[in-house]
Image (cartoon, rainbow, N blue to C red; front, side, top):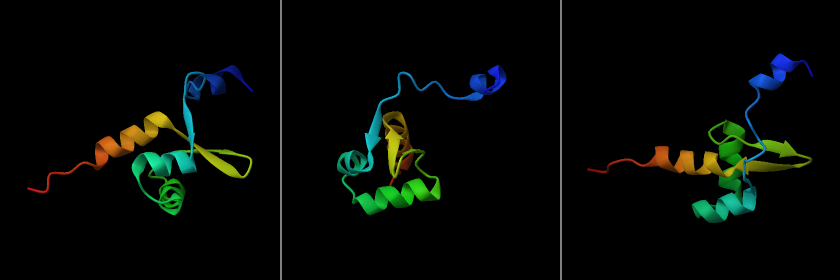
Length: 71
């Protein structure tokens, strides 16, 4: 891999990854809802074999942006 490509990648050494089941439990939704969020691109994830891993910070960011004022 050329050095400039490595510089463009996000730092992953200190990232805490969660399974889809862990994300579903944390968000109190079904695993299918998490899969839909991942496949739609609303929740970033990396594929590890046949499963997905979601950065914990991405889950918290998604939830922070999901708040709305119902008036």
